[in-house]
Image (cartoon, rainbow, N blue to C red; front, side):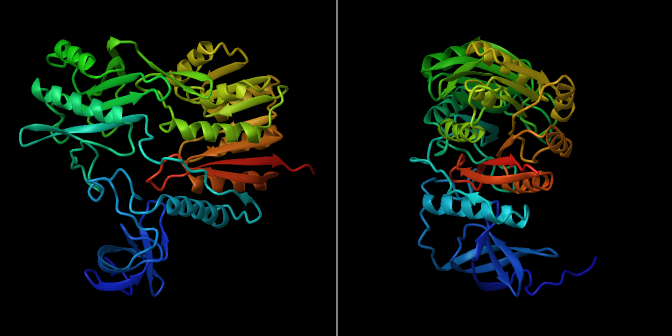
Length: 459
């Protein structure tokens, strides 16, 4: 094996200056041009570090001590922050977080997208950046004969037992603690990953921000849950607001959380919540944005960029359970939504009925297959909305957009790097990026969502 040529050696102690943050929140220092990635340090700081690992083009180091602290450094309020892998930025002031996310968006739009002349607005943050998540799902394990439930330790499968998570709704904390205690008392065995045995894999809690409704989900390896009736009775008596108790069965040896089979143990099969004045039914498996306050901010920006006057036809690729489609349908002539997950389309149709919205039509399938068929049927979009997963838009979908030539493309993105790549493809095909609005959906982490407006350049 070829020896790695680097200007530093493993276990070497160095004094370094931190220049930047990576997309996952590590500090970046350079030694003779060679980048070292260091957790828990901030731009502007000087630190003594120990080199931990060397790769061909970059290395990793561990913080030994801070020599000079950033004015943006704060003491993390979470007691398990140093061990837990859930957040990356509690040691950075919230104002500093918003600036770091804004810089990240600017950097990738210029470096990957090669787009220089676009207005990128400051990141829209939260008044209170804590307790925002409406969904919690935590793995369950065993230690010294008792159940533990919490997030995995960084870069490991060791569960950090958690009593409180400061970015989750307090109700989710209550659900996890009560369910863990009840399961422990009734002798429910946790899932053992290595041996693929035991019963309880994960506990999930979903919370309706506007309605106060709570869903409790047991994610199990087995169909049978011992003492199920007694446990359900205790949960409903002890946790105010529970309207749904669900079991999801995942018998496979996999790190995918949810299995294919779901059944109602008590109450209804969904909880309800609102984004603005649109009501949504949320099942155990529904994809629903985890930060309801900022989702409203994000969708209102998408609606503003779409600039609908009631005469437009809109296509929503990657429509999920219809969240953006139904939001836009209030101001569009007709909205067509497409999504590859059949259960999501069932939810979308259900949500349209729930709100008595009749000017939407949903189809199951790949956007790049379904949308050209619509085009052949004479459906021409004035506005195209895309809200793809982290990997960005499928290339075939981007080509479909270029062929359909809508006047506007509104791109909702959860990954600035793939947004930049896709904007470049659309720009090369005849569109101009007018403006980008980053929105902080996930305070205390490095994730940032964006809404980009593109218009067709008339030749």
